[in-house]
Length: 151
Image (tube, rainbow, N blue to C red; front, side, top):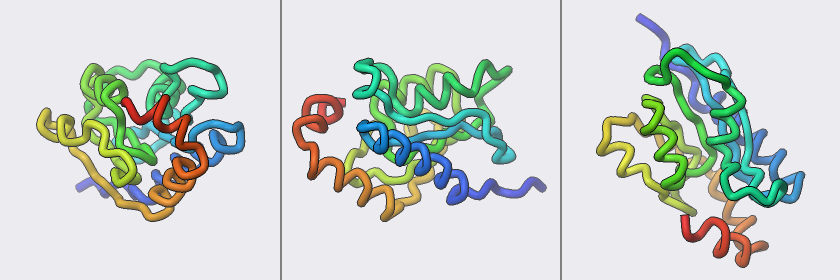
């Protein structure tokens, strides 16, 4: 019987990425893609502000950095914030089987839709993730409302 991956340790990598994004002047959202055994395939962070590119979300950044995989069914996307519709589409398009969410309090995204479509959702309800984004939103409401709020 295989051992369940350590989702909290996996989330730490996404949180590190969120801090990198924040240090660059961006939105503190991080993500990482793992195989079913918990081996890191790719990691990334939201760089929409830094690159003036609305498509560089944390999940897409981690996905791109993971490189091509034979199959994504057994992969695990770990993200500090519930994925938006764009990133949910990525999960569905490539058949990622599990999404671990740091928090869905500040933004619920499309996790119910993912669940309804057979994706395993694990919401860790991390207070660190909740606080990190809440502080960003309070300090940058105009960016949140213009860039993220409509996701």
